[in-house]
Length: 535
Image 1 (cartoon, rainbow, N blue to C red):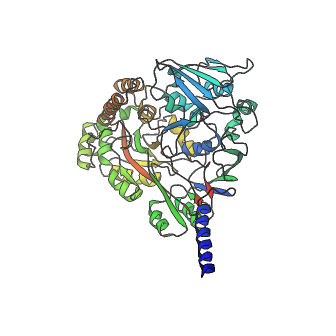
Image 2 (image 1 turned 90 degrees about the vertical axis):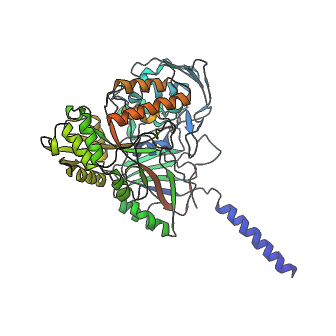
């Protein structure tokens, strides 16, 4: 009898111990991440797309970091920081003993180099008198669109592990901005070896090192065995980012076990994933917006009645119901409803073809007569805020045809789409784009996306003096409650002027194999592999 009880006790101990081991991090293995498009480049200062940043998230790090599953700030490559009483001087104290993947030391000069290279006027001070920054090959789009040249006056390496940023003005989102991808710290040595090729051979301090890039196929990263943070991962030996453009094919690759995580499945595949015992669903409300914008550089779109006609014509609810299929909600603001500063008092434009026709007549195009055929540029790749750009585009031109507006779809590969759209070509009338917030601040949506007076890099190029003044006021007001009221005014202005048509906020749901452990979605759409392991 005693012997039998002893066996039961041993079994129980083994059971609970086994359960503990099952949840413990395991080292080794290769995780394959299936995504809808390839990266454009891997130099964080010059990229703007999520497919580039998701790789950068694992290769590079910034001075500050965002906590898991939130935009709360925590130390990154800076252990601590101090802000002066007047809000214009930021002193960062850097981590010691950190090395880049090429073995060179991370220090204050690396910070000054990484951020200073984006400045139009390089007001920088290095410890090493031989350090110089080469000329820019092209404008750094994020930097320019966020008016960073009007914000940062100078950057100075005080000693090997202390950097001071002197600002030209109070900038409420500055610290949060310094956690964004564009502010990642790169190896100056690697960059200076071949500045033009650095975007294909990235070198940072992150948990994974770049190995290989087969264009339009895969990017391979390997574990950084000398990673400075010893508190957790990286646990995986390798991470492979595979490019699989078709949503349905990508999901099939997951079901057959050829990839571990499927980014942006078709909404119709989610119920199937729920029933599959080998899969699990990882989800989070998206901090995003999918929108349709006008080419504001064309005289045609200066007429608010014409813009309003388009807004009334498009049935956004039908698009969300039929294409997002339960993974999104109709948007009436170009910031998500979970974000402070959201204006819930705005009355959205309903789908009303008759009102659309009246606005079309006011614009001088009764029943569309006299209006030339317009183009609607549609995204070729799935994004968090738009699961199927081409299908959305087809639905939109169908709605427009019902009020007499003739439109046709235009699309390119993702890199060309972004490049050509940025140039605001004459043959572009309407275009789809969207955004996933970088830092949880409304400025990161409203100024970066829509203030055309701030920079030629702002893709919408909507230019409104009142709106521009509100954006400046929002940046330079520290009190969050007062900032929220400023942004509510700005949102009302966007709505009244129909600067853009807000289409949808999506819920992000990515299926994964059951053996993927500790993978978490992030509000900024960062893809973080540091603490992920395979069971």
